[in-house]
Image (spheres, rainbow, N blue to C red):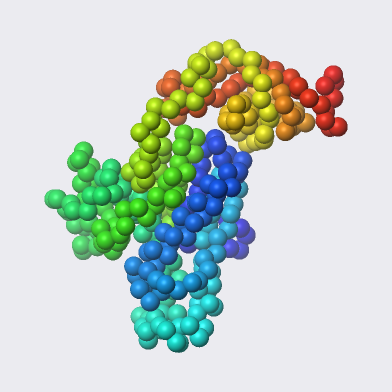
Length: 319
């Protein structure tokens, strides 16, 4: 987080495809629009007077992964924009809420509960395996009925705050569709809500994407470059697109796809002069997935040598 700035919650994409904080411009726009729409949706569920109000939602983008954070000052942005609109069109209850004078529940709380609702929607969806499920059998109660335990087909019980379960049961099942559509092998979605100073996170992996949005039938079986088998020695021509010191890796653009490449030994820093140059890579293919099994959709490369195929003013081919 930025120094002296606190946050209500966030969404972020993590994995080798975004380890340098970069993501396709259209995917970034879709992520921001999806986050914005989900927050507005749950604000409208809590306070219908705010549903059609055109207000701004501030977001800070942070690198490392690709992360969009909602600052705690978000409520102030909405309050500042109310002005005459609140007086002219809102009910008295909404006006008092904007003044933080409605049973000590104000605009900032709307944002906090909205982010929590997004977090719990994802958590319940993963637990149940289907966001279309809206009725639950054999529920359990805890903490004076404030927590409701819901069971999935495996018999596992998830305890959900009663208000968040109410949101889930009554909301649009497509509320996270835009955010989830960016998920793929090497890029998972994480949703975080900060409640009482504690971070509550839930992550949606590639295999869970279909719970929240439509997935093309052949997408799960779409192996990228099946001819590049695990353990094969390869010589590939491509372009160096990025470097990442933290993971000691670089992006290698091969046939319009960015593959993650690691040097067999030494630091990636020595290859920095090759950024954005066409190069020939000599190395081996790695198709181990996150569980250590052979069969990853997207191959990784471990190279012993990287030979530039062009020269710019910053790199000497013969040194």
